Amino acid sequence: MIKRSLAGLLVLTLLLSGCAVTSEKLLTQIEKRVEKLDGFYAELEVLVFSLGGEQSYQVKQWQTADNRWRVEVKAAAEAQHFICDGQQIWVYQPGLGDYYRIDAERGALELAPPFMLTGYLQRLQQADSFTFKGEQDYQGEKMYNLSCAGQLPGETLQLWLDKKTFFPMLIETYLDEQLLNRITVKKLELNPPLPAELFKFSGEAESEVTTQCQREPLTLAEAREGWPGSIFVPTYLPTGSSLFVVTRTMEENREHLILVYQGHKNFTLIQQARADENIYCSAKTSKVQVGQRTGLYQQNSDRSLGTLWWSNEQSDFVLTGALPLSEMIEIAESLKPEGV
Image (tube, rainbow, N blue to C red):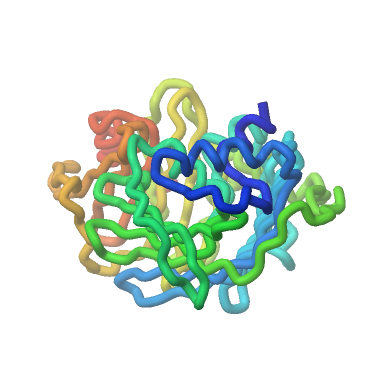
């Protein structure tokens, strides 16, 4: 099954000479020429554009045909590693003792490897339709240029594919014609030798964050250390949901507190100090009432995932999950300062 799924993502390094590629033949040729490909290694430069300014990331990624992968993301002095051995996914920051682990089968739904090239090819193949713009020049080479719908309403992907490998060498994501990010492939190796050690991780059992998250008071107490203001937690949860992972990250010079809940309906709640910044709204973003406040709501293209933004006097919140809007609002309206 893994081979078949990758067959829809990757291609062989050689194409039949003289075979013209058209919009009708493109995806068929990608699928036919991948079955002998064992894996790849890539180095990327990622630029993310937001209201807070431009952010730059250096990314390395490895993937094999048997569902093992590794992604290393570096931004300034910080780094984060994602490792999947086919059965478990580990997420950790080098230099820190803690980490968390997710079952790979469930993680495939909750935790996509960031900026993975094969993920963009998968979106291309799963799109209801795409536009093939023929050959275009990119850095002195002819490449195939395509566009298709992204995950969110109003989102569009632009991909420049290498004519020999069919891997994307440049990817741009737009939301209602506003550029969100640009991924440039600096190095690409197909079928390289990939040591098994790349996809292994070992950590001290007492440092596993997932086990600590089952003890809610301890986890929230640790998260509260040094946090500016109150930590807000939902007093209402969907049936069967429980706190899974608590993490703190720094983005755009603001610290983010991330609460991940698992259960029959998985969702993520992000909290950060209020910044009074305007959220970019697409045509598919709608205003909703969250108690006495006005929030914003948007669904992805297949309506399987929703995102709700709102604020109170202290904090900005983002709630994302496979939940109906009514239940997301119920969670949002139930937030109380932790310990109250």
